[in-house]
Length: 211
Image (cartoon, rainbow, N blue to C red; front, side, top):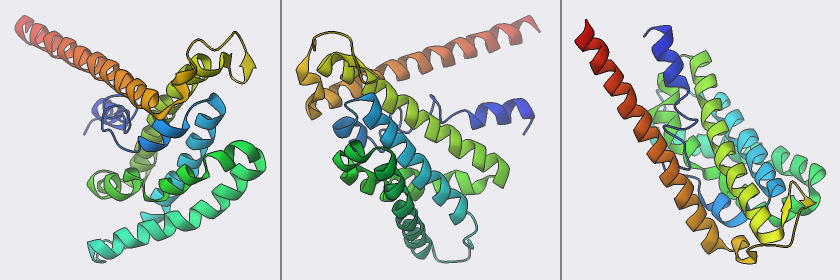
């Protein structure tokens, strides 16, 4: 694999294979709990600390171990990483962390750890895997912050905790609106990705014809 191809491969997690907007995984915390920027920040930091550290640590679990046992080990490592993560979030954002604590707990069994590890990450060299996993987490952050910022403005009339105006749409803090918003963002992401792919394919055909 050449460097150019490898670079594109590692960036998949940002948009083309965004774990929330394209794959529809790990959506519950964002749909329900990401109603403000700060909540989105807590969810993202928790997702980073639990998932990324677990993926790196579990890389060293021997592949000779039975698949079912490996998955149990992954969950065990993630559960251990949850403890310092919860303590840190409660120290930095006591009120917000308490409000979304149940969704931080859910991240222990998120699909990035249980599915992508075996099907993607552990098929790569360690350095490439570390960067690729980070791109997926950044993709999660993009989705979480987009939802959190939009809902904070609509539901509370504020941005980044600062009041801007009267709340244009208080119902934006509801789970139903969160579900609709994630769906709209997913549709936009898919549309842009599809358009870019078609444009890239067309450019490839034109170049091939010119040759």
